[in-house]
Image (cartoon, rainbow over all chains, first blue to last red; front, top):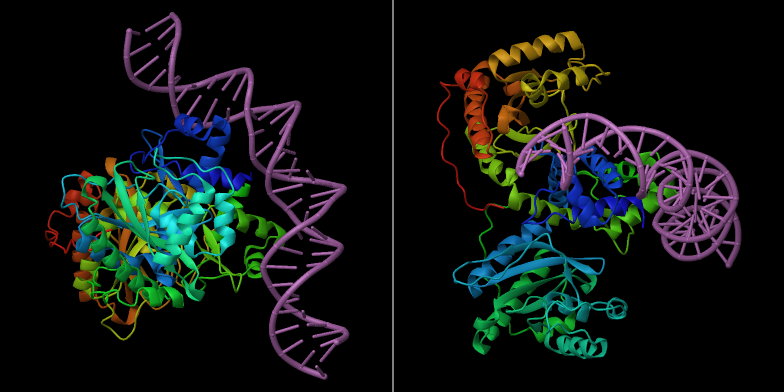
Length: 272
Length: 272
DNA sequence: GTGGGCTGGTTCATTATTCGAACCACTGGT
DNA sequence: ACCAGTGGTTCGAATAATGAACCAGCCCAC
């Protein structure tokens, strides 16, 4: 593993519940030597990827990432476009919705919205990368991706996150076949216990999946009627998201979803 | 210079006008060997900091930075807070406003807003880091920072961006003294020709400057009355921004601005 | 087609950089 | 005064980065 990766992996240790991390904690969490971590952190700091609290000397994410995000969003505004769609979907179904982009063999969260109209909410940390094999988003994406990706992912050990996580490659292959038929993926407590989710793929140009969108529901609320309502709304949101980001639905999928309701117009203010 | 810095500097080559860069162009722009650049890029790609267009093989900024920005903003929402303030200021004064955070010895843009009500507009690229000695933002920040920073910045060669850029350290020191008296910094075509700007410091906890906010006006519109109006509005916006981000104005500055108008309430919708 | 000029990408011996155990210096609690 | 915990630094050994040379593909002109 190269030095660059070692340094960048430090950034993944930050999370919503751990926004500041000290040197020793970094060393523990990353399993690397304190001196090494310190050199990496100072170099990241020189480039603005982390900054150091002058008093506590703890590190947190720095301003450079804000600048880079602005650059990406100015020219390729995926997040800006997806946000109102996810917001609308969350309002429609009254549950937590999120979308992610494929990054290597994981999903990188882009945005989530939680209407918070219920007593119980689903936990979601945008810092946390999502596995492909244990989430409805991931399986939906795999189902429509070139087979090589699925084979590569299923060909390695599949960690179980709950006791309902599917880890048998051949069974997962049959699930993917079902998802291809259906267009969406329904998953029950495979990543978080107590949480059911419905996910579908977001397509880029050429009809190749670039990410996924999904709705997460506490298992106690996941009645059949509710799931059906979610599936309908999700199909509409995915179609809208794919078109708005400049992607194209593959013809089979478009045909499959022909009877999905037209997407509702969303509030476009407050962008960027 | 370490390997990590070499790799991260590649990311700074992206800009609003150059959102995608090929391997050879990267090598040329960075002045490094093609093989080296390629290794750095693949490692950045593995970590999601860049992604490669499958057809053109050009690289662009990847999804990881979106995720990291979300994490930072979830726990330390500087941008989310500054955005409506900058928007309001831009509406009030009818000119381009922006705010930046200190990153090493440069300013890293965080947000800008341009009401675009005039025929001529000021160019602003959020990818571009701003120098401290040649911008009103930078000088305003330097004036209120611990003297060591100013000495360090003024102690090295100061590039001129226009023929009006101030590059004489001792003269700049006198400018800083004036800014300390005044609270704001007025600069005429020092970074962009044809552009005047007024900037002031944003303070963090302990009253130490963490960034700056400024208004940029085409020189042809920079009449005395307009500048005065801008100065008043800017003082209000800075006070509001400093308080909202959890900072404190130093006592002298608070006294200096005691007669600035109370900040107007801003639209808080569309956050994140 | 074929040659040239341009890509992106790979190889491998040389070289320079990174690594990490041991070492300070400081802080807060007992 | 002590200890246990920080953040930070040093320097020889070990490792990883480097870049000239090398493919392979693409596109255009001839």
